[in-house]
Amino acid sequence: MEKIIEKVKNDTSGYILKTDFDKYKTRALSTEQKPIIENITFNIKDLEILREKSEEKLYRQISSNKIEELLKDPQINSWVETGKNLHEVKQFVNFAETRCQ
Image 1 (cartoon, rainbow, N blue to C red):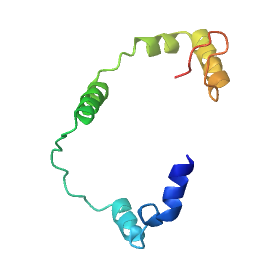
Image 2 (cartoon, rainbow, N blue to C red):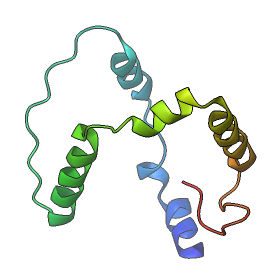
Image 3 (cartoon, rainbow, N blue to C red):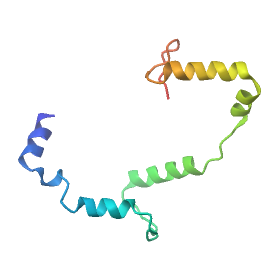
């Protein structure tokens, strides 16, 4: 970690925002129509795998039968909401010792 800190301290040019950052930020946040981004090709295998897995997740149809169960049964819905609220800031489920997702 100290190596990284020293590297940044010795040459901050790559880490400090340039003076024209505001110009780019303003352009990026504007509501005017942006140009269409053409297809991007990946040459690095890991990025291609990431793209494929991301597309799988993004275009997947979501099954809503569990949500329908919550809508039909107020007690289960209340139980789920209570559990969600109890675990919102935790990393592990209290009674199961599994990671919260």
